[in-house]
Length: 232
Ligand code: IYR
Image (cartoon, rainbow, N blue to C red; front, side, top):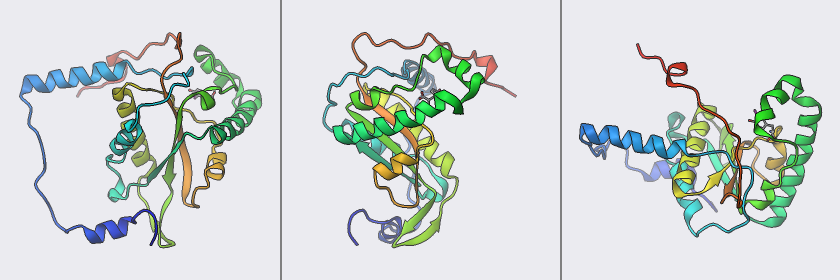
C-alpha cells in the first residue's frame, strides 16, 4: 500500500485493550480560572473577511491540524480529511468557482429574508479573501470509509467533523491566526478542483492568515447567558 496508512492497518498495529487515562487533576480554584481564561481567549475570536497576504510561520498549520485530528468521533473512525491550499493558482480557481456559486446565491437562491439577515455582516458575492489569505483549509467529511477500495460505514459524520472543525478554529485562534468559516454552497467544486476521492464531501472552507491592516468586523453582540443556557 502506498501513501497514508488505513485505519484498519493502524488498528492492527495497536495493542488491544485499555490503558490508564492520562489526566491532570487541577485544584478547584484552578478549574474555574482555567475555564475563565479559555473562555476569554475564545471570546476574542471573530470571523475575518479582510486578510493580509503575509505568510504564516512554519509548522503552525500542522500543529493546529493535529489538534483537529484529536477530536472525538463516531466509533473513533475519524471521518474527516483536511486539504491545505497554498498554491496561488489553486486559490484563484477556488475563488473563481466560489464567486460563481455566490453570484447565484446572492442573486436568487438565498431569498429576501436570508439577504436581510446577512445585511449586518456586509457580505456579498466577492470573495477576495480566497486569494489574499496565505492558506485555505478545506475540511472534508467522509460519508463512508474507503479502505482498500472497500466501503465501510461511518457514524455521526456531521457531529464528528463539526467537532473537529471546532477544535481547528480554536487551535488556529489560540495560535494567533485569523480565520473565517466560509460555505460557498454548493461546494461540490472543491471536491473536483482538489481531486478528492468519491467518499469525500466538502464540509467547510477556512481561510487562514493575519487580518489586513485596518481590518474591520461587524459590530455584533452575543446572546446573554440566560438566553442560551438552562440550568435544572
Ligand atoms: N455563503 C455566502 C452567504 C453567507 C451565508 C451565511 I448563513 C453567513 O453567515 C455568511 C454569508 C457568503 O459567504 O457570502
